[in-house]
Image (cartoon, rainbow, N blue to C red; front, side, top):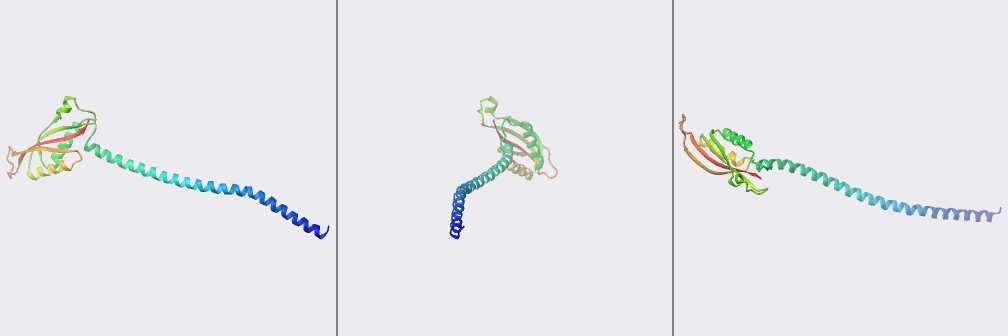
Length: 185
């Protein structure tokens, strides 16, 4: 083997290796480029899904917060019926907590509701006549409690008179209070 044959063989062998490497690696290089593009698209989609998941979690959190606020709103304007037993307890406690002494408590449903002509989802009223006795400060406290309570309450009228029995300090008055509270039919 001559030196020129060895150099020619080495050159040809080098070219063959380069050609095989070029054409062999080139096909993999193309696949690797596609894989990079798929990875980038997958990463973008993953980021979008993570953001969507965070948005859904925020929505669920807001929903749960609003659900608890809906429970409070339900107390202000309940749906269904007037829930007379709960209202009796509510106003009885309110009168007692304010320092007034309950004499009488009566209820009258709204005449539209009593006639049965109310439409679905309409607002109905229940009127309350409360007779109580006590000091003027206790009466003011009662009105403040009625105004600030969760249950929607309108004061329709108040009359003040002398108490039947005199208290020791002569400051006891008799109050006739007309209130209206509401519910959604």
